[in-house]
Amino acid sequence: MVNGNDIEIQLRKNIQVENEIANRQARLALGRPRSVRDLERIRLKKGNF
Image 1 (cartoon, helix red, strand yellow):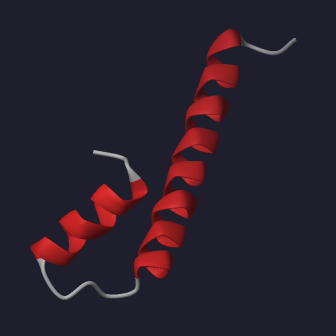
Image 2: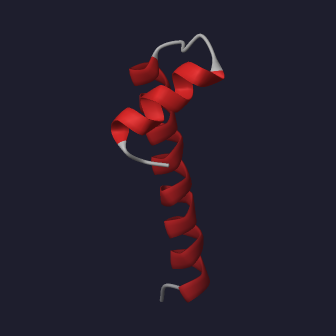
């Protein structure tokens, strides 16, 4: 029988992996912004604050 805690741990691991992948993709998409101002401009352009 599957333990509820095992499922929770597995879900947390999955979420962690998905977040890491998303972060990596975001970093690749951004390339290398030169400054904080560039980061702000990109963030404003995308509409997520």
